[in-house]
Image (cartoon, rainbow, N blue to C red; front, side):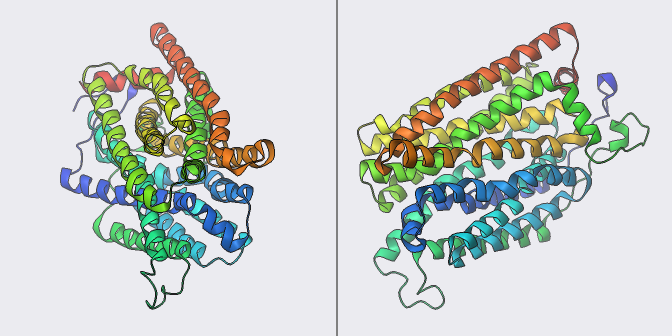
Length: 463
């Protein structure tokens, strides 16, 4: 095997393809459930308000801060754990925790109890992305990582549409008395039933992961540190690396986080906007918004994965930064859905954002795997969890809710609140990615910068 320039370690043979893709398939299912368990609440706003007596602002806290607090706080520790311990076991642990917490969400009798359950959902889900992306990076060579990462991201993208469709079907079926008389679940409110079913499915996935997969061999961390074998305090090497390369990494991370302010803020309130502004019911959402969101979610990451793999094979690693620079602009129509004037067109516009954010997620996560040393991959992904949660999941939904409730003063104006919050964010995110691209290009031209060296050396060494 050839050795890459500048001290990068030699290439290892990839694991047996079928076993690698089996692991990706299970991670795909875990990714689906992770998003369903956090986003199903977006269709349950009015039933929750009626049953528990909560306000729009409290719903925004449940959608954002309640989930995001532990999700953000545990992001870095989970990323470092993924760099040091069995990623398979870490993922199984996380899936079990968030699934049990989702079941508890369905049994909650007060806002405080539901808030606590949502905290634990965030705690468990913090383990998934750092460990899963790091796992995939060791299962596939760099020129083949785009598609498996895209598949994993496709699962998370499809989950939004699945959550809409499945939850809509449950609510519609309950309205016709479909569950009346059934043991255990027959007497449950539909929103409680949805949480119980989703949580139970997660326990099955966690068990399957432990039974059918194994932890792959990872690169030797001491080799990557220069062969000294010296290990500093946990997080010290990562902190130094990120600080040295902050000129490129800071706009990359903050551009991603601001994109997620839109993804979480608009995504949390778009179904409610369609119901309040266009008068649609859960059946319409299940039949139209859900399938369209799934279709867009399937297309987006596949496009991102194909573009990534082609750019690597063509020796053009900088192409990914151009994708990131322009992609947020394609989400602008989705945040303007309140202006569509017709319910089907509005649903189409809302759903289209799934493709855009799937492309951004796929390209961004793959880029991070290429611009940090292999033993920092889990930490690199976990930092996205922290920033995306603090700026996206925690702030996005509550900003839209607070603007609707406290400034516009009318629940029916939630669509305009989405516009006011999200449109500037998309423009800022595009500008930040443009800044990262310019700084990376300057580093390449000058032959400086660790991120640029890793990105170009990987591209050259695999072609």
